[in-house]
Amino acid sequence: MRLSVLDQAPVTIGNTSVDALHKAEELAVLADELGYHRMWMAEHHGTKSHVSAAPEVIAARLAAKTENIRIGTGGVMMMHYSPYKMAELFKTLSAFSPGRIDFGVGRAPGGDHNAIYALSQGKRPVMDDMYGKFEIALQLVNDEVPEGRLYGSIPAFPAGVTLPQAWMLGSSGNSAIATAQMGVGYSFAQFFNGDLSKGILDLYKERFEPSAFMEEPQVNVSYMVTTAETREEAEYEALPFDITRLKMQQGQISQTMSPEEAKDYPLTEMDRIKIQQERHMHLVGSAKEIAEQLQNEQEKYGFDEAMICSIPHSQEKRLDVYRLLAKELF
Image (cartoon, rainbow, N blue to C red; front, top):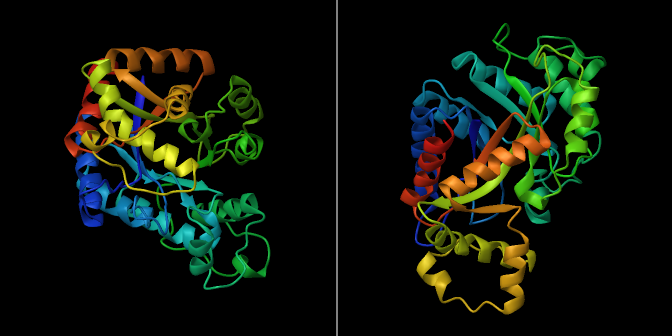
């Protein structure tokens, strides 16, 4: 199975923002050595629990530190950028690392309303026509001239670069048809709400129209995973993130605590039931169990690649997740 990495530069309790960025770099180097296919950085704003606020900048660093793995964004949140700026960013990245850059975009804000308005300098953010914005950016990346006076009179440089792969993120299936019509890859965030269905992916494949960015449809699915040598150890390492997710559902954004702290956290019986009910969004188990689960999911849904996001408190345990899965699946 083709495996990839999705990272959010998580800041667990007891660590700093700077630590998180250096740990993302460490993860990229390891993933490259292990043979992972790609690594994407997410975009988050205004939260102390994740510091991937400038994924395109981190991508430049990671591409310079690795040799074979594809590097990109999962994704740049389009509402905060002009198509022209996005084209300039990814053409520049591709000029430095030809054949290894992924231009992944999302339609969500990546932050709360305070972050949204700060990023738009207090103006009303423009949240409509995200697909049109992406299409213009793709034209500019491909050295084409978009219609209209605004973008049709000024090319995006550098010109003549190797095209990055282009991807659209989704978590509900609403974007499947538009993504297919643009001829770009479809990345489904299963860890977000767990609504993946074969029908969504089949619809994308059926409606796919080849483009300069992608000749055939490609689908990857992002999973939150915690694994270890044994299921018991995996459950122990997974509980801090489970608690973080519970808090988030209650409107509390918090950093991931240590497993020692989580062990003594006062969970209600309903909390424990909810955690188990959401195991389709957070895969937990031994490496062998997770490998089998991913293979079964691939057979059931027909995707090409699994992207693994993992947030144990310890960096060493996080790296072990990727080591163990590589051992089972490569």
